[in-house]
Image: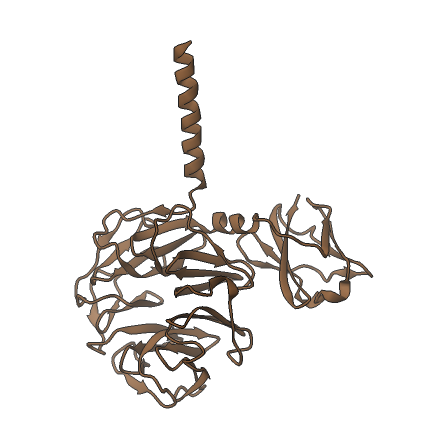
Length: 398
């Protein structure tokens, strides 16, 4: 009898442990990394690269399970950023360096003595430097020219390209966009409104900026190409270090860990399960996993787990009912006040955040019918605008 009790206790403890492990969103993957203060991370095709505060650069060919040092030819300087083009990988560590052999060797491409934040538009490389304005190269770093016209601040903290439009974030000058000829900058927002722009990301008309200004930290959003800005209320006093946009999902690295949004920034959720208490500096992802660089190493999670977890949190919808759910062919949206809904903005997304095209809906006085018969079985999400605010709901396709 005593053996049975011990066996039962072991089973309960083992079950509890299994549940804890299965619910852990993030897992550490640092085998081979000695300097765990990660400052930059990127994917180059199937390989993963990370850079560290003390100038170490590591590569993984097995999804982050193991890492090898790849510093041959690099300067021992904090690695600030990466940029990729085809088989070429650029990095910044007290200058710009290039590898074309997956990190086996590095070639110095100039701008010595400066930290640079790199981005590539077609075949033009932009290096936003901390102290020497923005420089560009049209021949893969053989020669550089300064683009300073219109910039009031020569300290560049972040940069991004969106639809051939280059944006940079600065220390005290706010955010700028480059003209179509590539010669002069226009200020989109002042440094008083958004200071110390550590991170910037863009998708079509949306621009997201992360600030660490002492008086104005947080996430700022523009929905009209930078003409006006609002501050996200859920990240009011957090330093935002990194922003990545993929489909409609926004991933954010902050001094309080990792946050994400599945509704294009309308709401953000903290997702730190499995992470130690640390800051997140950088983010990279592929079709399955998301990798983050932190002050305590590299961590990995499945994108689908993070998204499912966000969307299964309680969503209160008082103005809309969905039936049948699950649905096999026709999905009905019953709405109390159909005039409050922007019909053109009803979107359907897969579990990974990919937008799904459906036939035009049938609309009546209080009902919208969607033909979902062509969808594969699975979980989907509806996003719509109600009285000017994004709302969302989940349904299952049988």
